[in-house]
Length: 370
Image (cartoon, rainbow, N blue to C red; front, side, top):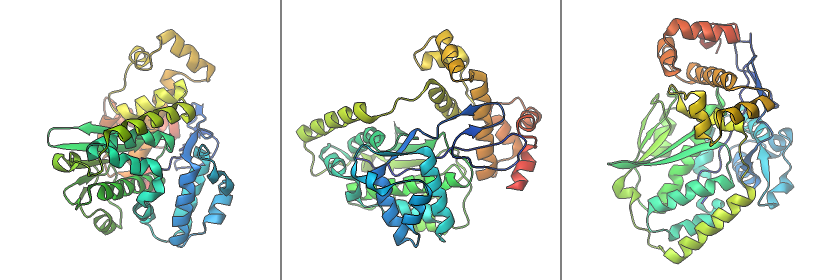
């Protein structure tokens, strides 16, 4: 069930000596390295076509936006066709600029119908409980989304689903999170056939000016600047039995899903694996030897593979810290001192010095320019 699939990803560009977000569809630059992820698979073309229809309904011109992003509609007939990160970035940015509603991300996710997810969506209804179906959804999401990090967590009083991406900062980041979380809640509502006002939602960024739209779309408790993007589902709701449960069908569906993943899932490069692990580690950044163990590689082999990509572990870590710094500065109201602590710096002065060395600006100056 591709419940997490209509998710955007972009390649953030932070040019050394320039104190504002800049966008380049080819590479992510920081003045100390260049990591090209722009040609990686992002989103299945079939979901781009669903999004195009929703854009038109929201007052946009999908034909013009697709053409500008270099996306050809006829590829939508191929179930294995994907658009790249660069193309999806261009499409999403075009949507934000052309659709007058600032809450467009919320409504794009809300407007996607359960039937838009295809046969796997209905097949998920054969799993014993709602949570079992969500586990399949996490696995199946790889068939349509290869860039957004989705994690399930079973806790004592509730189960949680967490969303994030290691490839986006700036103004598009909240739009993407709005889209994926509103999409998820609509799917959840369909599956439980009941009121979902008992769920709770946390967002990592500051509340937007249109915060009242969150209440309209989610109809549940919402909090901002929580450090994570998370949907918490009470145990009673998560463990609700599904009326159409059929173990034989469920087993067959999961096997088919595994086979498709092997066929189309694009393995991540060593640099990309390290980038993602560091990004989601936040302040607890692993040492080089620990990282090598995490990706099942010897330190020597990891160094060689990174050298072949014209980078190093130190450079990737520096860039991840800079990327996270810009996300915190642009989407939250955290103080410079708090951001320094989140990034693992000894104090605010150490962070400010490192940031200015890479960008030519102090963190506070960067935030003022935004």
